[in-house]
Image (cartoon, rainbow, N blue to C red; front, side):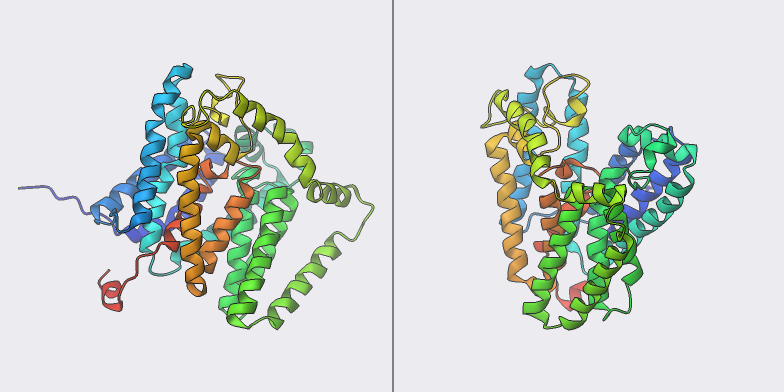
Length: 401
């Protein structure tokens, strides 16, 4: 008598962000939980679910390029070993930046509906709403959790200058910007019957988080969305009216132009050039010490996880770090994937504009942050890349799945 294991339907992967946010929430009260390791296991289980459902298949040239990129990142362990840095750094970086590609790129290609984005939007919104409560009450467990993530300490005074969810300040800004755009798109799709409260909640969270990249990317996403709506859907007047009202509300909340919070906000938003200048020295110094800029020095060699073992690292500049770690060769493979996805997305922009704008949001944020290797952001990025290369199904096939 053989034992057969029933493999869950692959659509359960739509709930990834709900699971991740639940894990981060539980970790507030059970700090021994290693959320990063737990979510890596979730991704591995998701990969086996796709494989068991026979969904991990190479169907076109872009799939082959993605596979080549994954294999090349694995092979860079050969260049990583001579650094004498513990291999655990390589494997941690692999779990954060490469594992999500395997699961979410191929899952994104299968998407028949918009469940992944909707569940993600509601999950992030609930997280931000709960975190407003925590930010106001500042329980010690909440501050201890953020201290583990961001090193912010447990002094309540340190939490008065900016807002952060229990996902950490970086994830708050990045996922907040993505969720704000998804809510904005929900308003458009439902003729403004749904999404207004979610958009307001997520936008306020992004503003109060004071992350420059997130604020810029949110503004850029809405402007790009406006252009698409103007030229593709011809539904613009109501959109402009709503944006004008939101702008007035934001100005109202910031009406005290002499307040320290307002001046600090303006300083953060207007200091893009200084932000780049702050990081450029470390970018160039890291590249200058790279052993081989052609092949790279190995995945994870210059990331945040190497700080405990080396003084040479490239913080907060994902593109420069990629060049140093996987070389010009690996970086060109990555760029070819993104450009091919953007081309495919623009060719079907009526149905793919959401995926395109999310790709642009993450790419813009990655100028000053390591978003491609951030375990909370990489999944939705690679899902969107895969969705631009979506498999076309007939109505019959969709019903069968």
